Image (cartoon, rainbow, N blue to C red):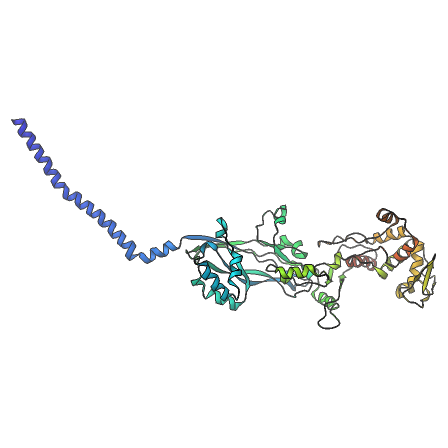
Length: 483
């Protein structure tokens, strides 16, 4: 009886404890849900706009900042090649919303055709969707302003400014300065381009290629916060690009301009005269002017040359891309007579005061070789023959020397070999010998060919630069200089 009564009292007491605690537990649950509700109300209502903006700032984009190429200046510091700002427009394919409307709008803003703009973008897949595609590289200020004023309504479209190579004098010294272009795939495979990236601009010809390491500079970068439409919201950080170094050429801008004016056509509107000119300081080999005509405007290559323009240049029979001053090989003509005279004097084969009669022609065997002056020069000595360029005098002098000995002295003036200038595609010319002809044509050398060689005709070939360095040796007393 007692035990049963105690059990009932214990059960009643436990139920009372639980009953008293239920309100506290319920209050805790209600409080927890209340906190959740208040926080939800704060996020959805009070801070809703801010949270929506934060959700849209959902990506960081790294932009590469191209380094301006260094300037190229003449010997007096006058600028030949520099940079100017070029404004471009492009798209990020992954950020485009309703592409058909975007391309239609860009077609109107850029005065272009929407279908062609769409073709440039294509249908990139994978990582390519996040890579920028350039649509225009050099916008006018008017077109740039048009695009900028509508960027808010064109998600995925961006504008940028890049340094663009600018050759201040157009065609002037084009073959010396050269041109630039995107690094080629075959170049990227070479060791010297190991740290270059596809799309990077490098020198492809002339001084631009020769001095690429000095002109290159160091690219920078910028981290941008962009929203889901690709619009820049914030700049996180950036590293400024380092411009390339300034390089100084030996060219004299004034002399270069005067030398090029010599090739202007006689009649306005006609193409420039063909040819080449080299102005060289015989004391040290400094090239003060170098001209090759016809030429081209390296500005055509600055932003990526148009296919149609490239076809015009590369298909032109006048070969404007060829640097005739270093790669054009021509018979030296009467300029060769100075070397014939030097060979004869060195070997003691001629008395400078002895006179020879020039009747206007010279007969060798059954063939008669004419002098340029049909009536002849009469009695001439070595000096007269050089001043008046008497062919007959040098016909006889060349036969006295012989072709192989003449070739020996010509090579002593560095003819028949590259001069060593550091511009690409230099040719070596040709100084023929009897052995050379035997190997080349399987025929013996003829005396008549020596007659022709004595006045710079026949097989002889030189470049304008070779002639300039050879005459520099005559002017400075016999020292060969490297241009």
